[in-house]
Each structure stands twice: as structure tokens, then as C-alpha cells.
Image 1: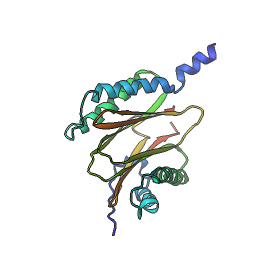
Image 2: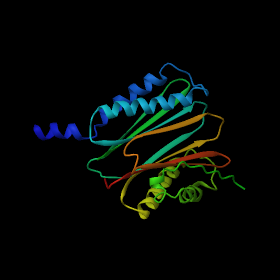
Image 3: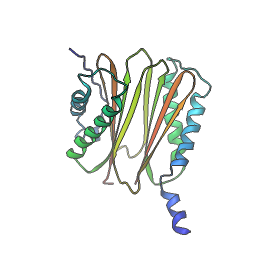
Length: 113
Length: 117
């Protein structure tokens, strides 16, 4: 159906974005244990790689990517976000990833231009 | 006496829109006197992002806003955050505010995306 095809080309598709994030996180920190000296570089790599892949989708969106990496030691972490945007065109996606030594939470916000 | 610390990175284009002091006051009013509690922290983060968003929208509606907040218990664990944005660097901007007391850290980021091209 032509209308559905068109909206897929210009819509914020959560599954598509989620796959990109998971690949970026795996690529940046998969197989690593938390290291204070490297975590700065890792968060940078995750957001930059995610953003690069998102912009390659070629959709008419501005993107904001946030990444939090926390060492596992029993501390509690809570995150929240709120948005003032266009409900019909804009969207977000949050991916939670973990291994034995750390948590990684990545959020993407897509704002239609 | 609880310790308050605030640092911000402000983009010039949102200087007039985002007042980091009002965000700090917003955080202070919600969790300033509190100690980290597992059963209420989700209510705190929800209140912080809602109130911060309300403050911003009151100032000006010519932006789309995203407010994100992280509250972490102080226990010696390392926490690192990063943001990257694909937008118009002339009209759009962000601001990050860091706050702490004896038992927890709070980091609030505001992203403002211009509605006028």
C-alpha cells in the first residue's frame, strides 16, 4: 500500500532504531569488563556510532542520543525523560544492556524536521 | 547542611531559553532533603522531568524539548554519561546540570530543538 510505504520511509521506527543501538553497544563494549580508565571512550563510541548509523537512514529527523554506563556494585540507578514534541511524528527508543560488570542504558530521541 | 553542586554546559542559542538555576532549584525542591530510597526514586525522577519540562515550556514554546534525568545512589560505583546530537548547531542546543547530596547524584540534561527553521 503506497501510503504505508511512504510513512515507513519518513517515520521513527522503533525496531529499526533499537537494532542500531544494540549493534553500537555490542561493538563498543561487548566482551569488556568495567574499567574506569576506558569508560569515557566507551560512552563516546556508543553515542557516535549510534548517531552515525541513524543519520545514514536518511530520514528527515534530528536525533539526540544519550548513553549512561554504570558499574555494577549494588547501587541503585533510576532514569526518566519527558518530551515536549509532536506526538504524531516524533519518537524515542531506550535500550538497556548489561554484562557481568556494568549496565549500559542508551536512549534515542527522533524529532521530525 | 547538604552540599549542592551545579555545573552546566550551555549552548549560546539556548542561553535565553534554559535557566540552569531554575533546574537546580527544581531538583532541590524535589529531592534536596531526601536520602536515596529504592521505593520512591521512580516518583522523584518522574517529578523532576515533568517540572523541568513545565518550566521550559512556560519560558518559550518555540522549541521542542527533551528532558532526561538520572538519579544514582552513592556507593562508590562509577557512572559515566554521554550525549551526541544530530541537529542544527545554530538554532538547537543543550544544557546538562549535575547535582548531589550526601546519598545520591542527580544529572539532568535538557535538549532544545528549534521549531522555526
